[in-house]
Amino acid sequence: MSDEKQAAIALDHVSKSFGTKQVLRDVSLEIERGEAVCILGRSGTGKSVALKLMISLLKPDSGYIWVGDEDIAQLNAEGLSRVRRRMGFLFQSAALFDSLTLHDNLALPLHRLTDKSRPEIEETIERVLGEVGLAADKGKMPVELSGGMKKRAGLARALVLAPEILLIDEPSSGLDAITAEEIDDLLLRQKSQQKTTMVIVTHDVRGARRVADRFAVLDQGSLIALGKPADLEHHESEIVRKLVAEH
Image 1: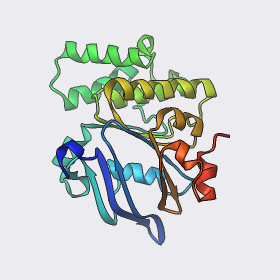
Image 2: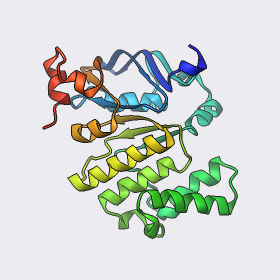
Image 3: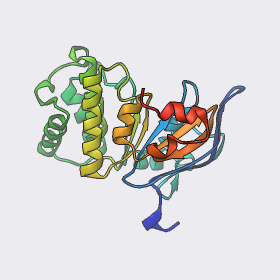
Image 4: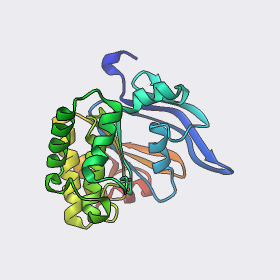
């Protein structure tokens, strides 16, 4: 595949089991650069496992996972660290360090993984926190943040290294409708302004329709549908039609 047409992420015949339970079955999926793909499916169908495979928090039992032209499952620790610097991960729980202020949660990866000067780090933190509406809250500890603020803080930390790829697990989980819409707006802005590639696991179809270019539908570990939301409304599978319908 030429560089010009190379996918940002590609799963090539990937399978994954935990004990006797097969979670993913021969899944192949390409996500283009600058594209947002939402992974939909019922609970327990392998959506979050697919995300963790893409950043090599889990290893596939078989198949290949490409980030650009690199098979990340085969990389050593140094190579994996290098590839992960191009990626941001927004965990469902936001996964902030409880003992650090919001400012220091963002500063930590900048100090560890970049050669930015202290003034450059401060400018980056101010800018990113401003983008997510938390500029006035940088001195707060995670315990002082509401659920919506924690989600935005997690997004800020995922964005602070200006990743090419953003992996997002349930961005609207536990949020009210207004706050969920604000998170969607932030993701849309990131996609349109920074051309960030996004893979989003979500149950929020309304939000997914706003952000996604395509839906990938998993069922019982298999990829059963892939396409634009409007096209999947008429899919032959009733499961697909139900999952992509706005409730």
